[in-house]
Length: 434
Image (tube, rainbow, N blue to C red; front, side, top):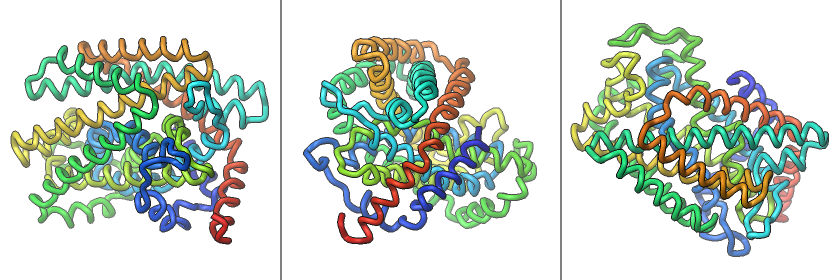
């Protein structure tokens, strides 16, 4: 799957003329450098849409996943995460452009957007389009229902560390998600545009504090990322060491999975943006990957590497390596910091998933079905929060692979269409028509 994603990303990058590199200055200037509180007609702005997307993208994988990647792949895995993250920018851009190009307005005023739409309307072979769109939505439902439990379980697990009952934290999480989701997409984006900057800032400051405390290890940590990128890492502390193949494998995994490029899920909320041209929102997709993988994941990596915690624990503890790093360096304060970060990241992911599952189910089966599936989603939140469903992660992984296979097949088919849309937009920019 990682090879398929990487090769597909290179092909898509060629179709869009590598705009994540050639137009990077323009992208930064017209995304984070020019934030608007509302869209062109007073609707959802590009920033609000990307905030809701980042609410899902910035999950426990940006913290826990980095610890696992370093444990299995060594410091060099971060180098490959950067390389593939750059490729993933093109994939996310293409998903967002396709989502807006083929979206449709619904009776409730929200857009039916995302993979279902660009598969059903964009793929010209009707039989293939029907198979892919139905397969995508059904797989999405299964994966998001399981994810509801997994991420809620992450919240309650973290809260247990500071002696908060699983029942209480589960109930609070469900109440908040229900309240926000049933306010519609406007309430979701209004909430996430405030939550995402706050939770990201808290976490980046916490990581910066870790780096400052261990400033003597900062430069050696950066050197180790490049030094072991092609050679793997020899045994240190409790770790068995990593071959170069494992370094690349875990780095590539973080480069793709840390930003969900390839599964098309975040394009659903990007598709709600009130913009005139699909590429206008597509560049926010580039920013989403840049911020999630190149910025947040890098801070996680440097905090863990600088702390030296990765040298002191066994491979079995890789899933809690970040927690150990913060606790060992900052004591109780560090434990509270990392707990707050994980809870916020996990909560924002669950919140976004609740919207995604309703939107795509409604697109295929109608609004009533969408609400029923959303209620089941809340039920899975309760099950996962109280009992935990980590044993179901393999099913979720398989389902996610199936989603990626379907979605990327559609994106590859639509590659030339997306490339044409991109070229026409930037030609107008160059001529001063936009």
